[in-house]
Structures are given as C-alpha cells and as structure tokens.
Amino acid sequence: MTDWVKGVVADITHWTDNLFSLSIRADIAPFTAGQYTSLALDIDGERVAQPYSILSAPGTQPLEFFFYTQLEGDLSRKLSRSVAGDTVWVQQQPEGTLTLSGIKTPGRNLCLMATGTGVAPFISMLQTDLPWQQFEHVALVYAARVWDDFQYRELFAALQAKYPERFTLLPFISRERRDGTLHGHIPDKLRSGELERHLGRELKADDSHVMLCGNPGMVKDAVTILQTRGFRDNRPGQPGQLSYESYW
Image 1 (tube, rainbow, N blue to C red):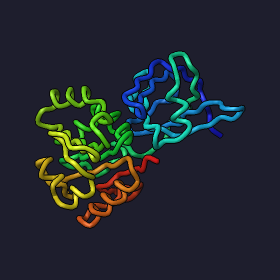
Image 2 (image 1 turned 120 degrees about the vertical axis):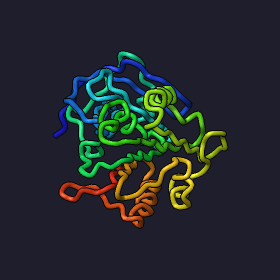
Image 3 (image 1 turned 45 degrees about the vertical axis):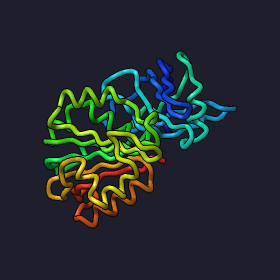
Image 4 (image 1 turned 90 degrees about the horizontal axis):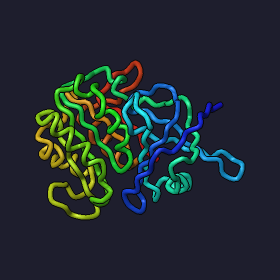
C-alpha cells in the first residue's frame, strides 16, 4: 500500500502551452538523484496517481518536477492548473534504479541521453558531485521537438562555465532547424556517427557508460545500436555499460 504525504505547491512555471515545472514542498524520505516518486490528486473521491522523476537535487526543498501535458495524460493537465498553496499528494518513499550509485563499472565518459521531460533525472544528477567524481567527462544529449521546449538552459550554461573541459551539452531539435543544435533524432545520428563527431569523443564499451531516459522508441533504438557495439545492460549482479528507463 502506498504511503502518501501531503505536499503543498510552492511555485509553477509555464514554459510553453504544454510544458511546465512544478515545485512542491513535501516531507518525503531521502532520495537518490535519478529516482522518481508518484504525485496524486483527489478527483471525484478517487486518488489519481502517476510516477514522475524528481528533477531537483537530493536534500533540497521544494521538490521540482517537469511535465509535458500533451503526452503525459489527464493528471499532468490537472497539475498544470495548480497554484501556490494547492495540495498535491506525494508518495513518501521514492523509487527507481536509474542512478549513478548503481553503476559498478565507471569509465572515463558518462553520456546522458534524454528526450523531452525525460531529462529530469539527469538534471538531478548533474546538480550533485557524483558524476564529476566518477567520470572524467560528462555529456548531456538532450532532444526536444522545438527550441522553446529545450529548457533549463541557465543550469546547463552554469555547468559549462564550472566544468569547461569536462561537460558537453549536445542539443537535438527534431521539428525545426536552429544554429548550434543537431536536427533529427538521437538514434539516427548515433548510428551514422554524427552524434559522436559533435561530442568530440567516441562512445566505447571499455571506457563509457550511457544512460538513457525518455521516449520509448528512442531508448529502444539507441540501446540496440549500442548493444551491437558491445555495450551490455547494467543489472544487479551483472555490471554493464547501459542504464535506461522509458518515460511513458
């Protein structure tokens, strides 16, 4: 049975008509960057819940979440109408294994590949010391439909300033062309080698770990490509170089 704690909306930011971030103060159990919890609203006498990755760094309040209402269903649309002071129920115990602590074969390079709001667990990780302690170089490959959907740019700029030789951001935009971004889809550019040319480094199973989150099609196709190169799934008792989670 799920244990719920009462959360209070602290702030909401509407980035676009479909994209928003929600900050909630809630006394949940400690979590690890990359984990998720469920949010719920009481609707017509029923508690309606859905899991969402935590975007904020561990140990910080309020908790922050990232939503795209066009894909994530009725609950996300109802949450998009929240205002400060509203009640949102939060699962007390976070869950999930898409974490850096689960990597038993750290290498030189960490490559984080995300689409849309699937970037949330990676933003949480990038705000901790762990990726910089475990890896020499960290890359974020982040795909959005249009440039207005590509958010948290100030955070990425701060990371580039703090780790100029150790952090690379590679934006993908699929539905428009924009200077400084790759047009198209992550698996296609991974297959052709263009993704790695823009990163300036090759992803190899003997020195890299790749984490993927977001669109199930992207995750499946990219994982298949990497497996043909010798990457293996990272599982309990079977260390590997691939960690991934589909986002809907």
